Image (cartoon, rainbow, N blue to C red):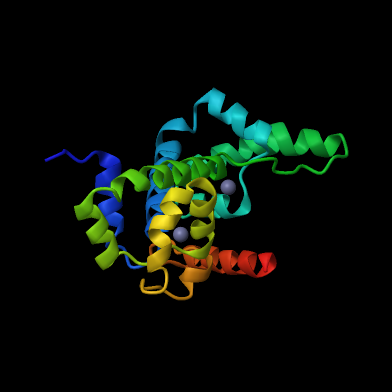
Length: 199
Ligand SMILES: [Zn+2]
Ligand SMILES: [Zn+2]
């Protein structure tokens, strides 16, 4: 029997998640990435320069970062941003704006990696059966992503669209693997607001 690689195992784990399996994988990965970032990259001058150039983080990822409660790490980043990005801009009478966010970029990378790997994984009969029997439906934003990135994969999942379990209201806006905690509930609320704005 073919040995399953890590991506394959991750996907099979996600098929048991009660919600969009891709949200589960992406959020799990981004949380791991953030944890690494907080514990290892805060003092890396190169990464700090990149963050300054991008103008910090988007609102959602900044809030997500605070859920780790690493106040020292966050203070170091904020001090750097205020001193070397916000103030110099204000002095020039320019409103400092976030241009892009390293976590948004990473999230996209993860999404792409997982979507592109799923097509092959579902060619494995056993994995396909597992997906068919257990996995919840993909959330709407992820279904759109799948459609645009791999039409072959989309064709494979589309016939099961109406029989798959869905978790509401997450089905509409992305479900998150959050711990139960106020700041995280707040993030969910932000997502709902964002979704309403998009409509
Ligand atoms: Zn999703
Ligand atoms: Zn972001």
